[in-house]
Image (tube, rainbow, N blue to C red; front, side, top):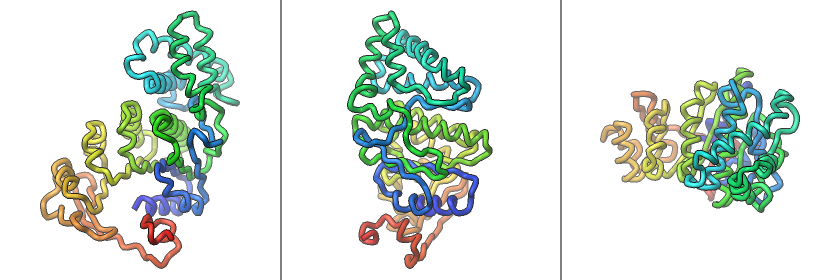
Length: 327
């Protein structure tokens, strides 16, 4: 369903960008055939996304460095743990972020952006002993083996269709990596907003984001702002129960304008019925339903649908997720 929508947007809306977060490496063939760029992100990859990339329209656009400071604080809290990020740490991080962006700000956010390693060097120059504590905490992600987000961006992020392949990101790097990728997407949205371009975001296996406190908060903020920024976000999951166990995710789901439901397990059906006020008769359409059949909830209306895509087409071969059909 998601691949079909991505294809339709790519072919119909030439002045729109499409960004996909792909945890299972399922979109590569489709994206490449649509002329898009697949960016594989992992600790061992030569692809790098600078965590401190920023443009002058970043965030609310009033003071990009202030908004970026909030992101770096979340990043440090993710690395150090909530207990480590007490008030004095926060003040020091904010001070160092302003310092690290001074020259870049003077250049009107042009040229090479500072990196996390630059940020660590500024921390080491501070007289307070706690600055050394922060620098040591982030060393693994700057000079250490997980430094993939501490180097200048070296991938093509300007293609109108971008797919972040995070299958090999690894459990240790996953929470930090997801924060950096989501922030990179914020950068893209802020540019597109000024250019009058729509940004479509597809996050597959979205339940993964709600496993971590800071990515959960970040995606909630993105979900609330996306329409204001001229974009549209789509979350995709087969693990509905895991989504509904998270308060932030449940709020996002209940406030979403459009929800497409395919065949559901008994537990998921019951929870969805309670949350979305689906009647017993309507539940029949997501009970043992065939491929491409289900329910669409649009605001307060719930509509059964049947979407049969012709199998004898090249598009179907690019979109199918059935292993036997991919052989």
